[in-house]
Image (tube, rainbow, N blue to C red; front, side):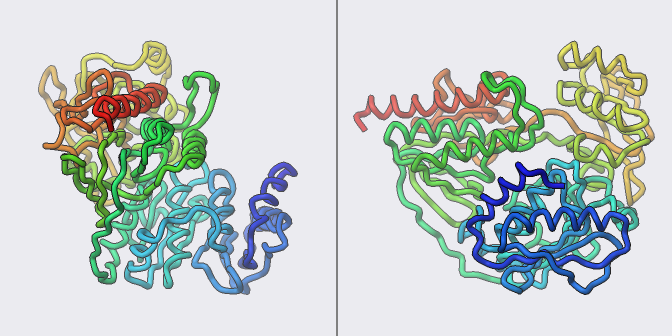
Length: 516
């Protein structure tokens, strides 16, 4: 299952292991058990520190758990972690030995305070690109928390469980038989969900002063990475604050228009950004969210974690997130018929009828992709015509199982208490309410700027974008912005990178003019 090139790479990756890591597998009569053994034994061949042993337990499916130094880590896999989840297995082995990238102590303390015992499962698909982030985050929590057990469950081996839980999207996180989350989620939001579901041990709230910086870059996507690299290269003391390094790029599949790079994918580009940043003395604060900004001389930044800092200049590069419909039923049926990722959740609707809401490039591309999986796709667009590139529109119209409804204002998502059963929309020309019976709704209506923490601080457009001049300056001296969070047209990775560099150079230029 592992070729020689992969084994050689793993030998290097596992070269620093100190603890003995055991992959302890269950007994099963399942036909795929041989595939599991081939995988874990192949991994074990790459390091004398990685062992394979029986658990003595019985399981209806291929399953194993990870031990470190003879003790349970709380990490279990039900299924064969190949595909996108192979990385989750490798990182779990490293993290079990406290190797690899773990959250800093501030975040670790918050994880340890989640009220135990914690017993949860994450249902995944090996084709899901969002699932590994959630699996890896929860595996890290299991390692860091004294009473935390996390099981990754490959949905193809647990169809009865999935049906009983009414799961129609991945990743789906279940605690005590209750679905608490479905879809992509940042680590800090995942921690908050567990705190909300299970509670958190009290801790003395401490305000931590992180000091003063020349520049604070808020946001870790292409614009933020570019801005931080440019400012630190100018000799400015720089801090980068981000919910997750890579930002929205992490959710991008194929990237073919980053000039000089014929093809890459979001996670790969994000890793390259992080690698480039690591070459410079930028202080990085990941898994953080800004609570508020107090403008002044210097500007003050307060984080939700209780940490605070000051900076002469701020560069805001917080990007954007998927825009929600904001209609009844959308939140209630998230993961049970409402989805945002056609690549991840499309396979759950094989042979079914679904809607795609949004006639821009992302919406039409989603309809085209889903048409190859589902029985029927109905594409809804608010305007009188689709906004996507003509080549995409022509392709969608050529598909026999895709129909297009324009001048349609989504009114509500209808369900039977367990799953989505229909979509109701208003015909904007006749004002008549129409109902379409279907099994799922994929929302693809664009992006919403992540600028709410700046409301009342800097000038925002009616759409929530930060208003900037040609050099990235905002309405407040010393505060700059770049990328998808701004009024700069064309939300593209290459443009964000350039705008981040431009804002950094403008900040440096303005400092020089002041004689700083």
